[in-house]
Amino acid sequence: MTRLRKLALMLAAILGLATATPAMADAGPGRCTGSFVNPITDICWSCLFPISIGGLDIWPSSRPDPDNPDLPVCLCGLRPGIAMGFWEPVRLADVSMKPWCFVNLGGMKLDPGFDIGFRSISGPSAVGGASQYYSSWHVHWYAYPLIYWMEIVADFLCLESGSIDILYISEIDPLWQDSELTAIINPEAVLFANPLALAACAADCVASTAKLPIDEMFWCAGCQGSMYPMNGNVSASIGHVQASRLVLSRFAYKLHRELVSWGTMGSKGLCGKYLMPVMRKQQYRFQATNPNPATSGRYACPPIGASTTFQSAGQVIPAIGEDMGYLVWRKRNCCAL
Image 1 (cartoon, helix red, strand yellow):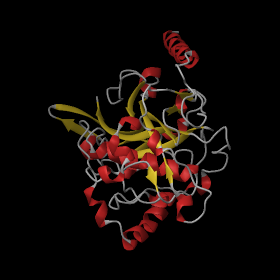
Image 2 (cartoon, helix red, strand yellow):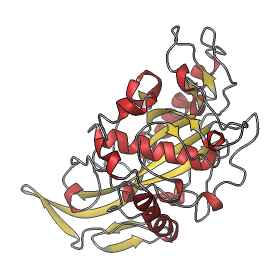
Image 3 (spheres, helix red, strand yellow):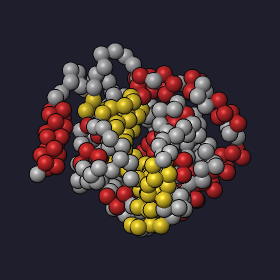
């Protein structure tokens, strides 16, 4: 009953936020659409698996999984433990071409009271030529430690703790809207802005679709395109699903480059998080939550760079479902008590 009471209070708070309409919520062009994520029915619970102890899968899964430490026991200082590996839902993300559109908060659109973030309003053009493939996106990043606050697993120190909170809003980040300023955090982009480097990403596309992306090809986002520049400007936009997943991949990489997000996988992650300025793509899975939650199937939570051919159907609804929402799953290796 205690868990049900906590869940009821949390849902009541979320509904209260949904009914609170901010002043001039419809300010700015474009109608924001979206819905709240139901923590029961809108989650792909099979994306938790596989769960491993050492190199052995104690709860196997058909979903691809990066290598885990071979030994089942581990040591952090003087504390022994069991080397566990699992997938954890830790973040929610809004990805929209409309500034201040909070997709996973019920499609709420805020008016900040000042003209910021609106410069990058841009969608695929119908004019023709190369410009028709250009789009600009914004991202909102939420803390969402689902397993922890639902108390699905009690007293497990490996889980990320906390509550739902907004951690990052790209509208107020000048590096997110200007590709020249973005070069401050990704100066190496000039080395990969050539046909050979881009053509090599075909191998990453195949690998990420078949199993897992190639971490050594850090400049590639698989079938979606290039990781550079690390902002929301997409010059090769094929569709909403492809472009939004590419932008989300870039955003995750940007947080690692800025040392906001850290590494949690592999032997180095057993005793705690570690610096990972060059993001390992195998650490993440992205599950669609808006406009239609992907809750089952092989490609419900694909790795970064996987082909969107099997994910695009039903994921964009003209006019009423063009804003995208995602749940971010993170690989965790931990030395559990």
